[in-house]
Image 1 (tube, one colour):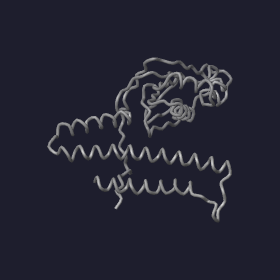
Image 2 (cartoon, rainbow, N blue to C red; image 1 turned 90 degrees about the horizontal axis):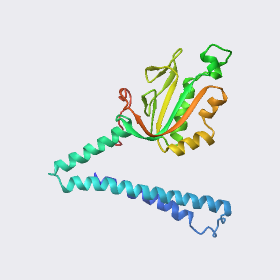
Image 3 (cartoon, rainbow, N blue to C red; image 1 turned 90 degrees about the vertical axis):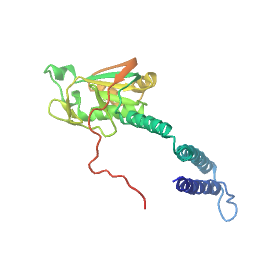
Image 4 (spheres, helix red, strand yellow; image 1 turned 135 degrees about the vertical axis):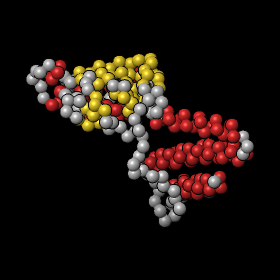
Length: 238
């Protein structure tokens, strides 16, 4: 296992290093010299590739360390079990299967008052499933690490669809007002919502009810539905 990882790493590193060397070759013989713009592009690509090499090295060292720890201590089941347990905790945290807390923002969305109380309104004054989906993407782009809608945890495969008056979110009917909580750097997220182009601003222009506030502590529950896949299977290269 360790030998295969080392071989794969060296193969990838060799290709990247070869590209780096090629970009720095003297092209005066039979080729053309790079102009300023081309040089800048090549230089940026070089920096990017160097970063990828560094990340690959870190990942390789991490995996090698795990393998060595197991191989060097075959009888130390207690430490191995502890490491596996910690990794499972991290995976559950990333998958949304664990309740979390932290600073962040709270967003309240609802249809425009005219729509709520039967006044004159159009479709744009109503919060739709597509609006929620875009708001979630905007929050992720702003650095949100965990998101919930009406205390329903948003995970990697969450989906929403209009279901009459309510919105059906991951099989659960959610009715407005929609309370969206997001954990992340509260100042960065708030600044993003205030200054950048995003769906929250769009909903304000459409006269929908929008309220945004920051909080030093937000609690988001764990995702309580199944994450099982019907068709997804692991692929093992032969």
